Image (cartoon, helix red, strand yellow):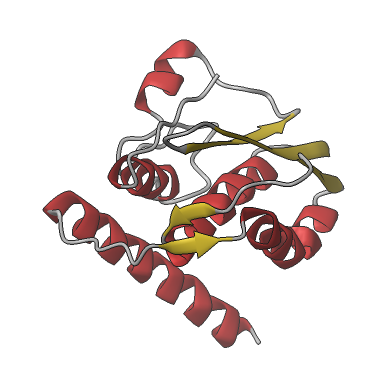
Length: 166
């Protein structure tokens, strides 16, 4: 079991490095389709629920009724949601993690907002400015490789989206 878990962790790390390399080289291709964001988020919560419960956390999801579909790459958006939720779980000692989806339509486009929040310790302004840089970690946030949020940033940017932290 230990070898299997270690192997999965190593494979995940290698895939993150490869994805980030493709993004930085401009070779990360998106296969766009209509994505059911509510179903995708539900799947991500299901996958992370055991990890959250081990940390005495509850993941709360809030969806608007009749959410429009997102025109994007499902695998890439799944990685974004998993990375954001995983970080919230990793850096929140106990309490709650929330994900909120909001959508609106106008004549030209569909606008979707994904908001992940938690009751963890937060981060100072300097850390917030650097959080999306590859390999960025600090002593208090040094539990990872520093690739997850850099990958999220690259995917969101390539998808013509916007990401911010506060």
